[in-house]
Image (cartoon, rainbow, N blue to C red; front, side, top):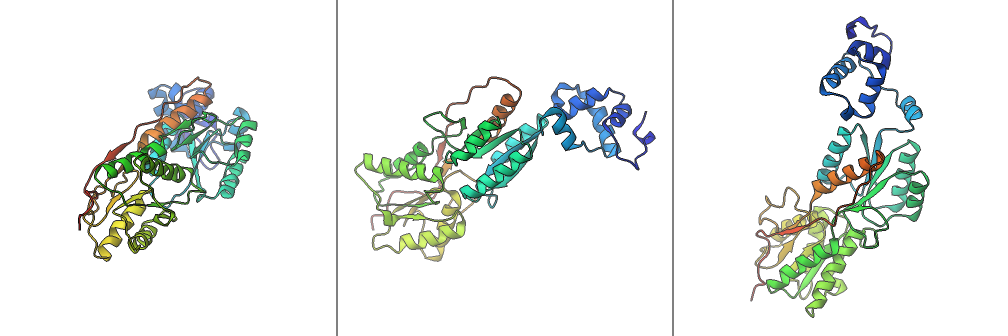
Length: 345
């Protein structure tokens, strides 16, 4: 039977799709729930029938029948920049191949907002959840445990291993940046950071910088730490403030890359030359880092790898497979034009 033989004035059923594709309804069900178990030839026939008949599976009925929604949630701090986009793209690609739909929300670094989003996702029956960072309300962990919903924390590591994590060591990454700058001869440091009380990655990066300085007998006073919401405009304001100090820093470590872009933009406005007057570093190696003038020395983080590995972990958990979490992922300093030894003048 062809799809054109079906009365399209009514909603097509799974049985209609099966007849049009020449397969059993159970095969259509398997295709919808786990495409990888169906042969490519059968996939094509079913997909053609679904498209021709405008068939849409009844999500509520599928959820009741299988006790699975085929939805995986992800809560990220922000959707305003492309900071999390590469990871989410890789994550979505992997979960989609396994027959899942990604549902995304942002909490804007607000713990209460995060809990509301997660509560709503759980109420809609998400099967698994991706979170960013390690600082979350204990009620969230209790809720996920009670509902037996697999989850994974990303962009971070936890030494206690009490929660599954896929990410990198933010403290060590930031310490490496400080060491690189000290090797160039810098001793007067400043840092532009996101709020360290609401962002555990920012807090760990600050700790990494302070620890690295202390090991060489240096320090950074609180007046040289500027906390701001993440944006290039906030980076401009923070740079202007730091360079107005009676003893301006010779090196500014930016805990998030948009701060570094703003700092470089503002340096031109103030008539300062980077890196002659001040060295600037970023964090994450976003697309603009190599294109801005001067090009930005920064920490390259494995964003796509984090997303892909997080998806693989959650899918394995959902299919009842044992899966080992990876060791902390490697990061590297990408040296470009924005850093140099401190000027002698």
